Image 1 (cartoon, rainbow over the protein chains, first blue to last red):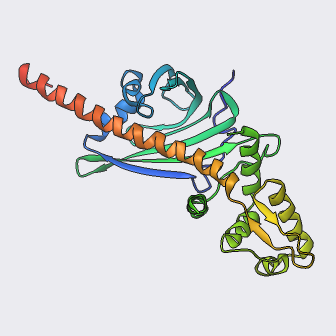
Image 2 (image 1 turned 180 degrees about the vertical axis):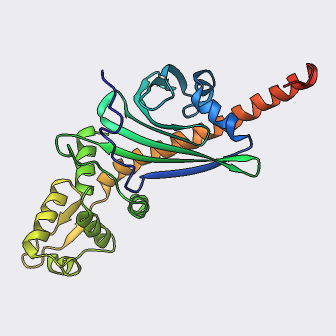
Image 3 (image 1 turned 90 degrees about the vertical axis):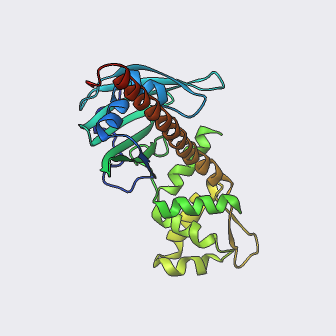
Length: 156
Length: 120
């Protein structure tokens, strides 16, 4: 299965991301960047708790492929097949890829690593594109405000 | 969660006018005429959006002859929220693991530095 071409199905670098998360890690930036980009390290922590990640390919350069599978506690594999779009060591990574082995479901991810008084602030921005016959060619996203509305509505 | 229903919901939400309509309906039932007012759109144009929303199961419309009030049905939004929630969980838990991992390897490095010649 072909990986999505860099930039081909990019929903997102111009529009507001669907999800933004930030965390400060008590480690130097070079080290944090390294554990994101070295498969030996990345496999040790990538994925929710209870998941085990096997990295098949991690070619960290623009256009390089990144493939892995996460095995969940339910025994199912959750594959990812993507490409690195931007790699700026040690400050920025952008990758784009298909999830669940479905080329119609893609996730665009930008990760920034900022120095912050000897610690490292990591910010992840993600935009999702969910294409089907109904949505083909029209990448989907909504803004944070709407995201909050959805969260509010489902609690009603 | 049905992928088809989810993609229908996403497609429906892709339009800013429809999101605005849903946001208005979150405040309560409203007639089509009142709904159309803030949008500077013709009634038929608004009706078209309402049909899309209705087909996606995001709204229900009353049968009261004259003012067929529109009402929000949030259940398809739960699928969408669940989807985004999965990603939030992915990152929160990955970050927790990353935090632990960084602590572990830095501790190891320090210990190595002490037992060896502290060259590294």
